[in-house]
Every structure is written in C-alpha cells, then in structure tokens.
Image 1 (cartoon, rainbow, N blue to C red):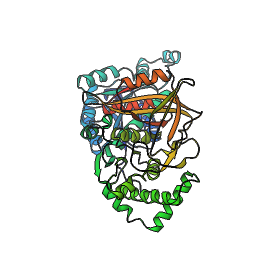
Image 2 (image 1 turned 45 degrees about the vertical axis):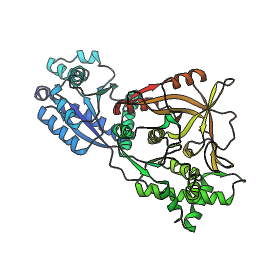
Image 3 (image 1 turned 120 degrees about the vertical axis):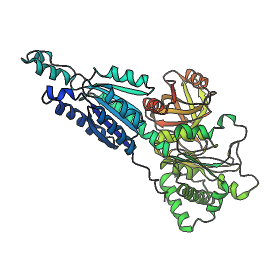
Amino acid sequence: MMPEKIAMPAFKVGLFGIGLEAYWDQFEGLEHRLCGYIDRVGIQLQKSGAEIINVGLIDTTEKAFEAGSRFRREEVEIIFLYVTTYALSSTVLPVIKKAKVPVVVLNLAPEPAINYTAFNKINDRKTMTGEWLAYCSACAVPEIANVLKRSGIPFFQVTGVLEDDPVVWLEIEEWISAAKVAHIMYHNRLGLVGNYYGGMLDIYSNLTLQCAVFGGHIEIIEVDELSALRQQVTDEELSEKLHVFSESFGIQADCSIAELNRAAITSVAMDRIVQKYSLGSIAYYHKGTGNPLNADTMSSVILGSSLLTANGVPVAGEYEVKNAQAMKIMDSFGAGGSFTENYAMDYIDDVVLMGHDGPCHPAIAEGRIKVKPLQVYHGKAGSGLSIEMSVKHGDVTLLSVVETVDGKLLFLTAEAQSVPGPILEIGNTNSRYKFPVGAKNFVERWNANGPAHHCAIGVGHIASKIIKLGLLLGIETIKIC
C-alpha cells in the first residue's frame, strides 16, 4: 500500500480583460461583445483543470484596484491579461502590482483578419469605428509593455487569434503547466536521508538557495529513524508489499526470498517516512558502515525508492539534492524524471549510453522492469537487489538543476531520442540516447555549462515548458539541443 497523496492548496489562475469605459456609451454592443471574448478565454483556460478566477472586463482604475486585491486574496499563481481593445495602462498596473504574480499578456485578435470589403461597406462611420475597436487588441499592448517595463515588472506575451489557433493555445497551456509546476515546487517537502557521498564535490548543494528559489521545505531525516521503522513492519505489511513487487517488477529467478523480504521491509518503512513528513521527494545516501541496522536499511532501498518515484515522490540517490529537484520538476510536468548520468559513448552508432544504479521511474520504462541481485554495489557498501530498465523509446528531455559560480540556479536542458539497441545488462538503468547535434557535440556542450554529473530524464520533448518555468522562477535556462 502506497502512502496517501499529500494534499496541496488549490492551483488558481487569474483572468481579466481590459477596455475603455468611455467607449460603451458611444458604441452600442461593444462592451457585451468584448466580455464575450473574455468568457471564451475563460472556458478554454478551464480545460487545464485549474481553478479560474475571472474578474471580467476592467475598464476603470477603481475596478483595477479591486481586481488586484481579489487576485491577491485568492492567491492566484499566474494572471492572463486579455487585451480586448484599446485600454489605458492605468487599468493594468494596479492589478499586477497588487497581485505580485507573473502576468501573460494575451494579444488575441477575434478573427485572423478583418473582412475589409464588408467593413468598408458599412454606411455609418460610428458603426465602423465600433467594429474597428472590436479588432483593436494590438493597440494597447505596447503601452502596457512600456509601463510594466518601467515598473520593473516581468511580463510575457502570447500573440495570435482567439479561435482556431493551436499555437496560441499550446503556448497558453504551457504557461499554465509551468505555473502549476512552480506551485508544486513551492509546496514540496524534500526529505534528505543520510549524508553526502564523500569527495563527490559536484553534488554538494546550497540548501538555502534551493528553498529561496523554489520555495518548499527541506526535512533532514536520520537514517536511524528509517532503520527503527523497519523493526515495526508487520507480516501482513510485508506480504502486501511483496505482492506489489511481483505486480510492478519482473523479478528474476536468482533473486532470493531473503533479499526480497529485506527490500519489502525497507519499502514499507520508506512509505511511513513519506507519510510522517508529508514528503514529495527524497534524496538519500549513507554508507551504513559500523552500524549493521543502518547498513541493512541503506542497501535495500532501491525497490521501495522506485515505487515511490512512480507514485509522485521522486527519489534521488547519492544525496543529489539538485537532481531530486530536477526529478520532481520532470515528474510534475508528467514526463517522469528518472535518475541518470553519462555511462559511455558509442561512436559507431553515435549515441550516448546513460543510466545509473539505484531507483528508476517505472512509469517511463520500455517494457517490464527487471529486478536482479548484485553481489556488490559498485563504489558503495553492501549488496542486494537492483533495477534494470531502459527509458521508453521515443522523444526524451534531459534536465539538470545547476548551481553556478555566482550563487544562482540554472536550468540546463536538451531534447533527444531514446533509441533501441544493445545496453549493458548490469542490473542498472541503461538507455541509448541520440542527440540532433551528435553525441560528441552534445557531451561537450552539456559539460561546458558545468552541471553535476547527474541529471533527470523524462519522456516527451518539454524543453519549451522548462524554459517557461525558468522565466516564472527567474532562472536562466540553457537548451543544448
């Protein structure tokens, strides 16, 4: 039985449109028409599953102040501003300044083009002006951009057509998806179990920086607590977990009952740790030398960690905090997020072999995952059961959260293909990746940006979403390919 999902505050998206109050008495039906545009945007936004806070058409500064206060009270994570026609920037700035969340300016025309012939046949100049104003969304955007720039407020734009414009709605969906991931990361509780792998200098991380940029909470957990919880596992819990193992993995014939029991007991204990501290991700490592109970615990975490990873609690080995964050981001985008590193290069097939020992992300596996016994965990104390899998063939995205020399965070990402072919059947995750710039160029360009040697791999090409997440969080993103 997996731990219950942690309740999270509702993800809310703000929406408002702008217009000029002076127009309504002059041009009959214009206000109603523009409100209809906003409602159509609201209906589309609801398809994202977010709670939409639509404050309607803001056409005076008084309404702008009220809208900003409401967005602040409702705790929206992102605001979409639909510019329906010309409007004063004074109806925008109070909203955004008060709400203090990212804003995406929607410059969406109601149709791909004005019907010039029909328009010019209108025999009333006043009616013509009203019709023109209904298509005048592009007019106010420069004014709004100027004021937001001069106010030091970041903003983003989506330009296109209100209806039947797939590019527009893909962009909007990606902004919502990125804002939702930022929301998840802000509320995430990352558990750190154990300590660093001594001497692995690239792994050491600034925990304060992680909290300052992503938000969330970091819970420091003693291995002793996990070991103590293992002593409390009942026979019924053990039996149930063994059943989950058999359903989830292809357990190889040479896996002993004793090792399976050991892994199942640890898996139950890990579930309890997750439940106790409301964890959304974990990074772990511990030698366990000199303490038999801790050695037993930390050499039997791989299967339980993989199950947690598959169920929304990514687990990173080697106490790789930055990669636990990267894995959580990828998983929150629905792409998976498996722990990986460069293994070797195949210059004949022009692929990079990547994988890692320890937990995997079962949801993105190519075929059934194999469980194999290892006589030794290379470079680590102990032995036990391990995972062997490849990532699904097709589009993949790599993500590394990098700490830079100037004390900032950087997203490093690349898009590639997971391709079929021979892998090293050594009881680890292992995949073959082909990059559009070639294996050699990829490796050199990736390494030149100074990431740690681990990264997260997920399915699909989602670099455009990662770039948007970086913009929302103020993190520079470098896309290699």
